[in-house]
Image (cartoon, rainbow, N blue to C red; front, side, top):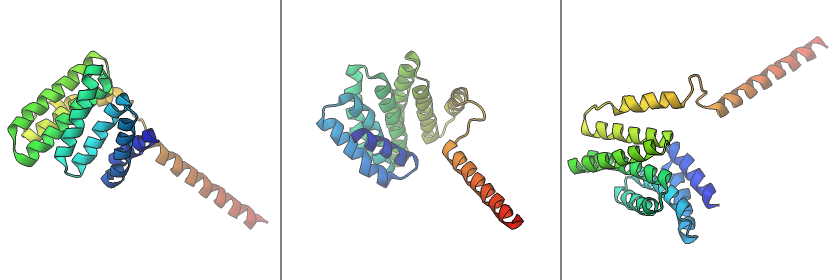
Length: 194
C-alpha cells in the first residue's frame, strides 16, 4: 500500500495536484519509516519534499531532504542520494528566489554538482538529466545563463527517441473513440440499406 501511495502521490505531484499528493505521500513515508524500510524511505522523501515545496513550506521540504540525504549517503543508495541532492538544489533555487539569499544559490550549486557527479560516475542518465535541470533552475534564480538548460535539453534528446508519443494513453483512447465512431457510422449505413 505504501508503494501505491508513493506512486499515486508522485503522479499527482507531476500533474500539479499538491493536495492529492499531500494525501498520499505522507502516508507512504510514514509506512516506510514505521516499517524501517530505509531504502524506500530515502526514495519517497524527495517526493514529499517536492510536495511541501509546492505548497510553499520550504522548511518542511528542507527537513525531508536532509533526512533523505542522511539515509542515502552512508548506505550508498546512489539513485536516492542523487535525487535528493538535485531536489535540494531546486529547493535552494526556490529559497533564493523567495528571500534573495545568494548563499542559497552557492549551496544549490554544490548540491547540483554533487548530484551530477554521482549520476555521471554511476551512469544514471535520468538522474544526470535531473541534476542538469537543477543547475538550469539555479541559473534562472540567479538571472544568468551558464548553458545548463541547453545541456539538459541535449541529454533529453539523447534519452527520448524522436517521434515518441508524449501521451500514449491519450492516443490509444483517441484511436478507440475514432474506431467506435467509425463502427457506429458503418452500422447506421447498414441499417439504411435494409
